Image (cartoon, rainbow, N blue to C red; front, side, top):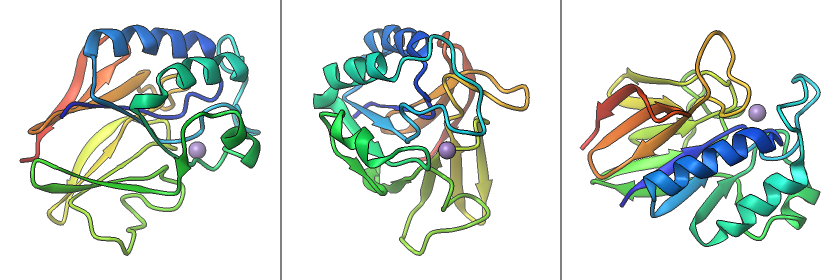
Length: 179
Ligand SMILES: [Mn+2]
């Protein structure tokens, strides 16, 4: 199983199209969206080629592969234009480990969920990283459109053994073996 994880698109059609090229190259079994899909949000500038409707069209074309969780900028109307379900959190078992996917505004390395997990995967902060703490792994995908604090436009690739934090160009920034 190969998963590709994207977060915080915030309506950027420019980076959505760049990411679509990466999806075609990586050819994942599933695409996990960690929220903040369409709306730029009051704390962010407009993203490159801001066009939520076009982003929705591209995501809807990938609906058979998409698993999505809700971000703090995602409204009810965003579910209406999406042909895939937007969940609160998603738990998946991969390589014998329990992954919990969440946006990150509620649960993160400083605010643990009550739900059991080995690896917590989130976005929201727009800073990609892989960290280990108290026997658990915490992974942030970063944002593909609006990276902060000198981090890169990034996404994650997860296979049965490794997690890779990658630049939108495909270059590996960091990785960890989890199995
Ligand atoms: Mn957010």
